[in-house]
Amino acid sequence: MRVGVIGSGISGLTTAAVFQRDGHEVVVFERGDRVGGVWARTYPEVRLQNIQGQYELSSLPWTTPSDLNPTGDQLRAYLDSVVERVRPNLRLNTTVTEMTERPKGWTVSGEGPDGPFSEAFDHVVLAVGQFTQPKDSLAWEGREAFTGQVLTEKDLMSLDVLKGRKVAVVGFGKTALDLSTLAADRGAQVTQVFRTPRWLIPHYFLDLVHFSYILFSRFGSVMVPCWAQPNAIERALHKATGPIRGFWWGVERVFLRQLVNAAKGRGPEAAARLNLITPTHSLLSDMRSAAPMTPHGYLDHVAEGRITPRQGAVARFTPTGLGLTDGGEVPAELVVLALGSGSPVFPYLPQRYRALLEGGGDGVQLYRHLIHPQIPNLSFSGYNHSFLHVPCVELGAWWVCAMLRGELILPPPEQQEREMAEVAAWKRAQINHEPSLLCGVNTRFQQYMDILLQDLGVSPFRKLPNPIAEVFGRYTPADYRGVPEEIVAARARGVYPKAVLPVAT
Image (cartoon, rainbow, N blue to C red; front, side, top):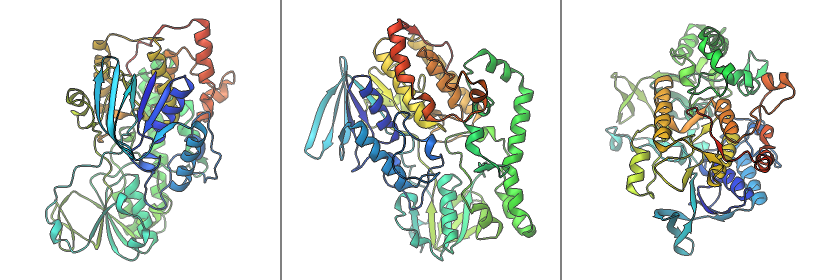
């Protein structure tokens, strides 16, 4: 088939690599002047929360130098190396403005370096990412009266602007925590304004074990409640809720220990500030896309008063800062808005399909997080966002390839939509709201990938025959390196067509 991929972030490049490997002709459209998606342009000193070996295509490991947590520059260098090795038909500086249905596919139209274009495709993959849509403009009064400067993280091209100033950072996600820390590192007096404190993931459990050995082991991931459990053992485990509750109570104590340690020997005022960033809701309800790691130095800055937490909602700008709904005021010379992204929109799709995808305000729930049963010849990449993101995207792309070959027997569209609604209802009931809530599998990556692999007739247990490694070993993209060959072998054995697993995901 001729396949168009819209977007050249990590999800788009991964999808292009899989589709090319499966024999399709692929064209990648990118509106920017380089690949990378949200990573193409970032604030200085940003780092990936994931570690290097957890964020790579299974068949294309890092060949460029990198820290344990890659910087933005290092990640961009890796993505450039992916382009060099995959060599996709890449159209930079090309904006897609319209997609028109054909009897068997789509016509993609837009504007490129050589002017307007229209091209026909049998299938299109939308890989525009769940974090690319900016939030709606803020309806805070008094912006014109504020005598200081207002920036978002996308405007922050140099950290020098933070030096020695009164800075108000609005938000509590990764970006807000990063920028609060970076500003305090440069002598700024920072007030961090937020509605709700979130759970902060420590880099090391009990100062001994890197978090990835816990979170990315099958043991750790199986303990996470999910809308679907892929096998009878996991279903039985989650019916006996006592062990699950006990496990997560213990994990919460480990997470809180970092705040307690930061307060030691620093007096009651330090303890009071740290108490303001201590969450009162459950850790499991914060298991979402925006779950942040604790930036190095952040807790020390809070304890020592260089970052002052201020819980509350912003109501307006004042001439000298921000006014809050409780009547308080935050003085500031510079306001940094780190409020995250909005719910995804698809302005180039026909209106009837936009209505199916954009109505909820909390993201896009898809069947298998990959397709919508009412939209033919279209799939999505990256809307199965997870903490082990790249393998999820790879397996999702292989699943779509199998579907296009007629190798998967899907349930009727009505049942697919019932299952989509079931998953969406579970997420809304169990996970704190975010604009991209429905777009992710997040910490449920192991359950999700196990289901896709069973759909494909491939073993989900990637570390066997070593049972200890299978249960307690850290899973990485490299564990999924052999999946393409196993799919080819399944084709040779006549496994397909095969009905997908009867579970909602």
